[in-house]
Length: 191
Image (tube, rainbow, N blue to C red; front, side):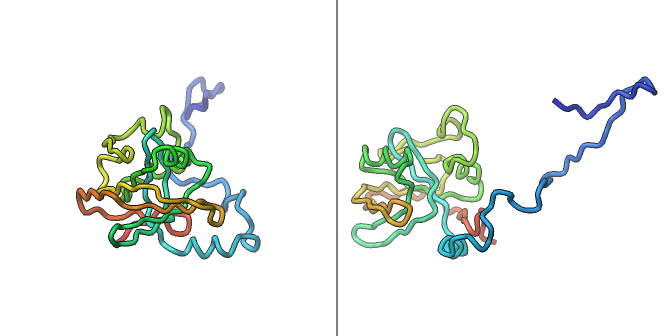
């Protein structure tokens, strides 16, 4: 482990050396693992230019996944479409339960979104931190602005994802909250 002190044998004393405490220090000016611009998928680049809501899908088990590819259609009954990873733990739990919950996330939920996307460590499991409300559709964040309880209708391969179709059976709206958006690989907020 490095320490910010250095022993100066000539002076017989310990002196402090410079440590940069400024956040955001960079080793590279760009991502060294990024696909070169000319080789990137134009469809993925187009999708990245569309702002998408960040939601958390959960199911009994519990299991969960951050999802930004979602569409809600009003009607009798209301319907929901979403693209998820067919190999995710969430999909296995949804298949078993035939139901799931969808929670729109807000700006305070960035770390939660990263945790359920597999981008942030989750010692003790995905649901080990935070306060959760148990529902028949899966646990939902207690500080969310609301959630929708969905019944699985069907699913099929769609592109590299799984298109999930569901019927909205229950909607709980708690408070009006600002949305967390995903745009060009980053979280954004409405200003």
